[in-house]
Length: 363
Image 1 (cartoon, rainbow, N blue to C red):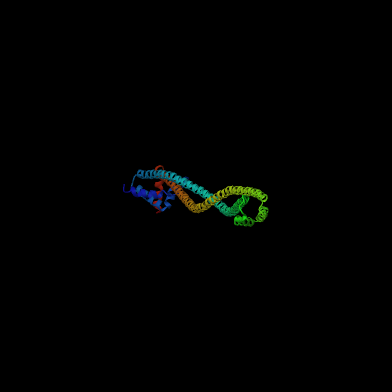
Image 2 (image 1 turned 90 degrees about the vertical axis):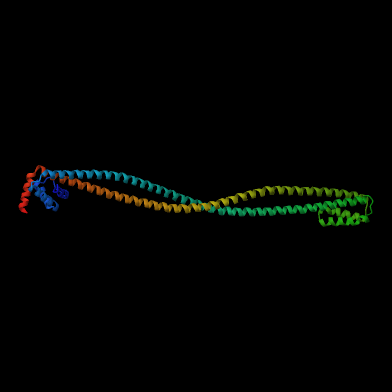
């Protein structure tokens, strides 16, 4: 058995020799003899034959080598199959990851672009709304000033009418006192105050009355008194009607302003709320754009990493496949050499012996 171990070692080395099946046994042995390892094997075989060692032991060793090569190939096939399944799983996962990142990049790009467009539209609209608010406030101020002027005019005219009606009433009382026989001297002071108040108004309506009262001051007669009382009643009626007309106009203008101011205020509220909404939207748009840009950068890096990983895995798989194929080919060649050696040793021992004798004479 001590001789068998070195023989096995050398046979493994010889297994790497490349021979052609068309060669004769002597040519096969001659080819093996040219190789340093083959030369060593043949030396062992020569010694084995010279000492009368059984060829069967060498055959057993060659069978073991063939069995080992076949076993190694089965293991390699199993590892290759397992690696292929694992590789295909890794590749599928990476391709899925790449597709995901590509989808995210498209979605984020669309989000960035659409939000940028929406931001531009919001910024334009907020400027328009700001201008509308300013116009609304100006309209409200102008209309409010107009309404205040109308109201102030009514207050002044109404006060004038009240004073004029009071003066007419006072004049009527004085004339009635004169009609009742009260001396003019007793009413003179009151008469002059009323006359002065009527003259201050400079109303065309009072000119006939002022003239009549002036005549009455110089001459009091019943006919003139009756005429003045009728005139006073007519003037008072006209003043009351005029005051009522002014009040109706004031109420109508006030009602119109209430409606108009309500519309302006509602419009102002709507515009202010719209502006606030747009300004908040602008802030959100900017945040969304910034986040989309940052996420887009991250997704681009993730995509590059995944693509790099895929390339590395594909290179590794190609290397493993090449190595597997090379080792498989080498084992096939080794099995072929073993089979040729077995053929030489089992079927053509005489040729081997003859070659070894000749080899001994040569060396």
